[in-house]
Picture 1 (spheres, rainbow, N blue to C red):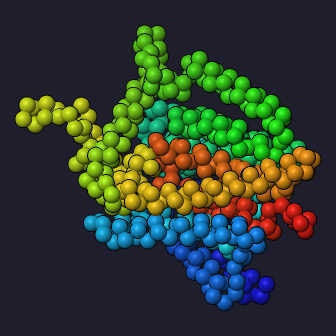
Picture 2 (picture 1 turned 30 degrees about the horizontal axis):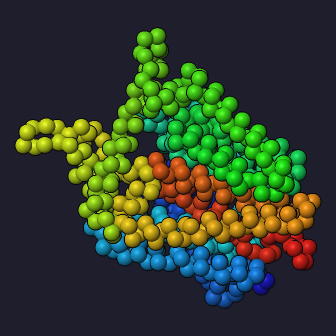
Picture 3 (picture 1 turned 135 degrees about the vertical axis):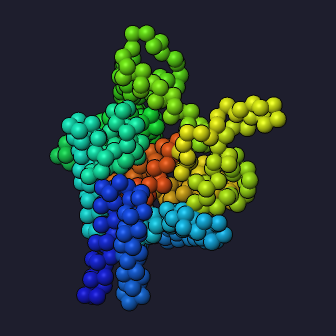
Length: 479
């Protein structure tokens, strides 16, 4: 590698690491004053990467032709959606919000491509290590900040009053649900390492606290979506996380995990904690008699949140009906939602008010990434987005399937990938499942920092699945 190539690679990688690791600390880069500095840093990293492509070479995959074709199709499948999103952004009535809406989907793709094509094996492993250490720090900060200060402060700014009243941990994010989202990633990556057969005992002991931090962070946030997501991740772990183990052991481990999962659900449901009350408020009406004021406040807050979330999603679906095929345009939800917020059961002539009226709040985002994608980009955009998403997941799952075949061919006595690469790949698959599920009822992926982090993880995951130099060396036996 020439000096120029080394310099461009190191500088580009530095700015990439700054964006991925630092953005979650600055309120998820949600506020415009933080979003744009990170956007500029990422574009500068992209410029350096492009210069490197022009004068040097990229770290192109070295796998077999089948894997390279899959990589090519996965990469090319992103282009139709990005082109469509760009055109729809140009057509939107409010350009500034349309620009931000487009960048929220474009920038994670930039991160993924730079990680995939611009990072060598050492850089990928350093980035993986950096992300895990960063998640450790984010989780510890969120837990300690809540234990000692009740999350009254988010970094150096005051937190929102409603979350302080509800006693919910927020970490470095203003919203506890988004803190739960970042803790889900911590839990998923830790679980991938813990479930990998070849991982040494020291490494498992080192990462075990991260799994605990992820669970505690979700519980302290009192995010129902986060709690349900942890359950879904455990189901995904039973399906894909045991591919290295022989079938007999695999089914015993699945049985043990299922019993553990059922025990955790039973303990949560039978407890009188405010977190349990938030779940039960969806299904049963608890008697107010004999309950503390704190429990009553938590129950009322849960009921209000449930109602407003339904109102936001249903209003977004009514807005989508304006233009079902092409959507209302990126970034336009916040400008059109108040026209559709009230439910349709009102009658002006008879003087009947709608069941849900638009009086108390304004919805800047739909509390569902998938619904907002459909609302703003329509059926066409939704399909174009699902195409690369499906191919990315298939590419990473192919790595799991190949690993299982290698282990089976070796009589379950040898492994395919190195433990570091395989454990990260499994954790990234769990993370994709977690964020896809949680996004049904929240907007974690519209938080810029979470999206950039997910882009980096996807790039690492595809690299591990595709590159022969990073995956197991079946023929050469090199690491």
